[in-house]
Image (cartoon, rainbow, N blue to C red):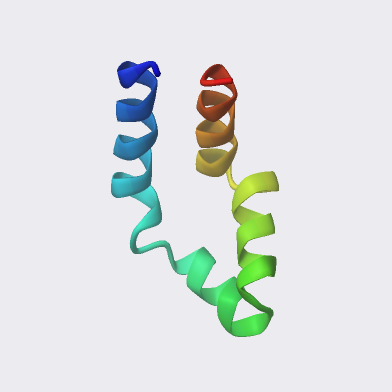
Length: 57
């Protein structure tokens, strides 16, 4: 495993995702699945995390 990539992912998640209002709003309006889909496909930070995750494969 590439530790540097994992560190980048963890840093992004800690800085932007832990108290994300958009994620909470999507959970309240829809479901956890809707919030997850928003984070992966529409959020710029989620897209960056996903691209780093692809580096691990």
